[in-house]
Length: 427
Image (cartoon, rainbow, N blue to C red; front, side, top):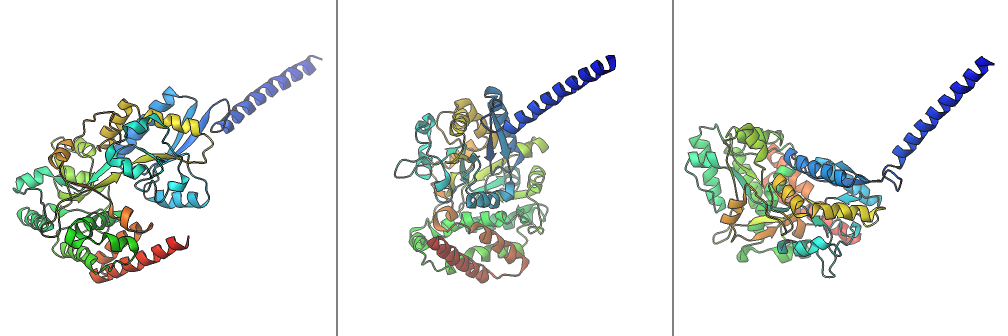
């Protein structure tokens, strides 16, 4: 009898444990659904450099502390972002929150929730209104920061060789040649992490604006928009990139260099110029005496003007079919608090997208210095069909590897431009 009672007690004890384990497992499964443990929002972002990721992770952690019932499952796919989002768009299964990275209306518009009823819209920087708001008043995404790209330069290097930031492309080429000669080849005049196609895409995209858009005598914007553009004038850019390679004004390993190498080389004063804006934080961790500057894209044609290349950088849109619209809006509202706006602007070293906070940004004195320079939208976002970024970047790789001539690059651009325009027209 005693043995029977002991067995019965043991069975009951095991049953309680199993029930407890089953309950725990069920809670895990409901995490992310409308269960008692709250919901999980999926979030995809294009942030790639470590400083930006740290800034975003810090803000997400603060949000989850304040709203423990809402979990953020964040993803930073880097170079795989666009391909992953295209798959999700095709399946109509988007993340709850996602980065529109310059395509809030043209590419992602039909997948985004209208955010016009949110309080933060009143603080949207006027420079971004046309980008995020359509003629019907729909607001497509929340701007974490805004782009103001040109070139980043190593101020220590330019000061050492007595070089002023160039205003024109001819001055830019002269500066590159001077740096090579004066440093005896120890400093790379213009550096590319060309193992990633986007490095060359950035060069072509930024310089296309002064070449083809902003000078009144060389304004091809209408032809680009209506599909009649003759790509011959574009050949100037691959010709100049090839000339830079032949004169050893870019790094010898431009086709294989990894983007992450840039930080260390800048810290060692081994690079003079890079495309776009490079955060100073990681560089100064390696060299506290490092000094970087930013400048607009030089003018190309005589009488032309410099241009900042900008608009939307990192954003969060809410998927229109999310199961958790209120929770997603709660996250956006959290981001729009002045102290969080400031934290993200300073953490990413870029101007904020809202006007309700003042951020201490390292490059702000340079933005102030060139405050009279117009901010032009990224060339590909306005004038090229969706999908042109990849062929634009790979054309640079093929050019420097010797498989394409400058004329071939323009022909490739023309072919892809026509193909993708026709593809858009058939959709």
